[in-house]
Image (cartoon, rainbow over all chains, first blue to last red; front, top):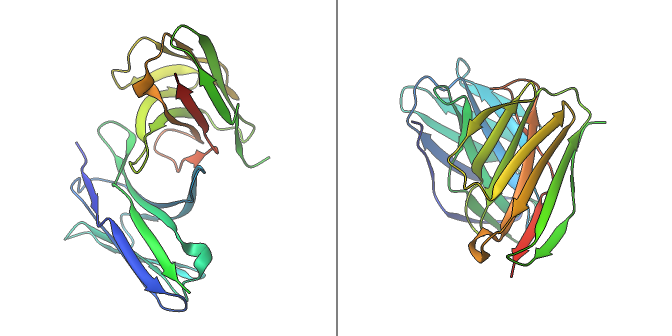
Length: 111
Length: 112
C-alpha cells in the first residue's frame, strides 16, 4: 500500500517563503493533495496536482512534483501569520481507492 | 451549497450511551467518508460509502456503525464506546471515489 512521509515542523518568519516537503511510495498515485488544518478545525483542501504535471501554481501556492523521486513540495510565498497550521500531504492509493495521509507538518510563522 | 456540515460540534458521552453523529452535503457528491483523528495525528480512514453502498470498512470495531440513508446524508451510530475512542470525527465527501475530498469541521467526541 501507499506510504506518505513528511517532516514534522517548519518555522519561518513572516514574509519569507515556506517549503513543505513530502515523499510517497506508490508510483501509480494519480492525484496528490495538500490540506491545511487549523487548531480544532476540519481539513481544508488547498490544492492538488495530477501525476502527469510537474508544477502547479495557484496564487501564493506552488506545488512541485518530481515523479521520478516520488517527491512533492508545497511552497507558500510571502508567508503570513494566518498560514500557521498543520499541512497534510495526501496521495490517492489506487489499490484501495482511498487517500493515504502523511503525518502532517506544523508550520509556525514568526511575526 | 459548497460545504460539508457535521452535527453536533461537540459530544460527551458515557460508555453505556448510544449516540449518533450526522454529516450532510448538498453538492451532489456520491462518495462519503468517515475518518477518526487523534491529537497530533493524521486522519485515519474508517468507512467509505459509494452510491450509498459501503465500499470500505477499515476493520473498525462494531461499536461504530455507519449508515448512509440517502446520497446527501451519512450517519455514524455509536454504542458502548471506550475512552480511547475520544477523538475528532471527520466526515468528507467527493464527487466520485478517487476525486478530491472535501471535509466537514468535525465532531469532537469525548467518552467518559
